[in-house]
Length: 68
Figure 1 (cartoon, one colour):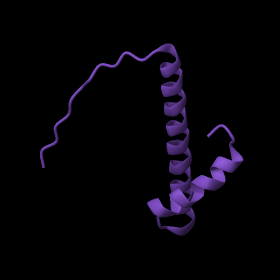
Figure 2: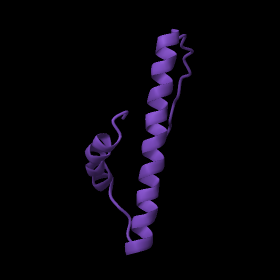
Figure 3: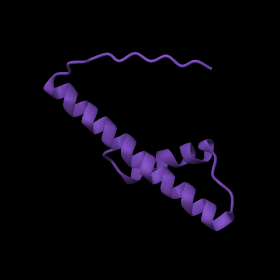
């Protein structure tokens, strides 16, 4: 399989920079939270959790953290 990538330079405004930083913060938070859940589930059951199982937790998390 060949993968091709292109790098494109963007010049966001100050407001767009803030929005991008906020979105990256959300992604980082969700990644770390999901990784923690995966590790805990594996330690407790010896099995992993599916992507569907993780996605099912997201609405509850959004209610718990209103900034998401």
